[in-house]
Image 1 (spheres, rainbow, N blue to C red):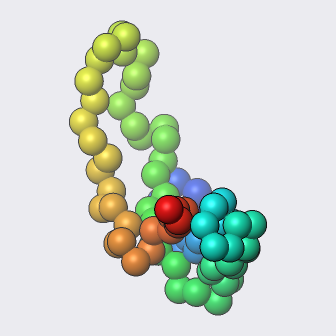
Image 2: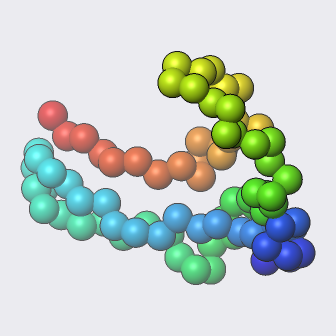
Image 3: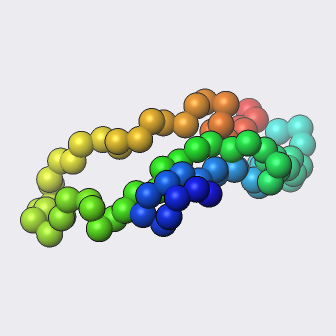
Length: 82
């Protein structure tokens, strides 16, 4: 982490276990990630500097995310066996 809670960056590392639900190895656990992985850099966002949302009404449309999406190799997902 560098900076403060309102301004700076942190490294986020995905750590967990994938569980096979079906297929040849149902119930098999595959760990992924490690605290030693470099992770992905994310920016701290000071929520006090965000625009107010008190004027939003049901059905309002908002712009998309302002940060760059994570690279595909940094995303984890479940594996599905057929």
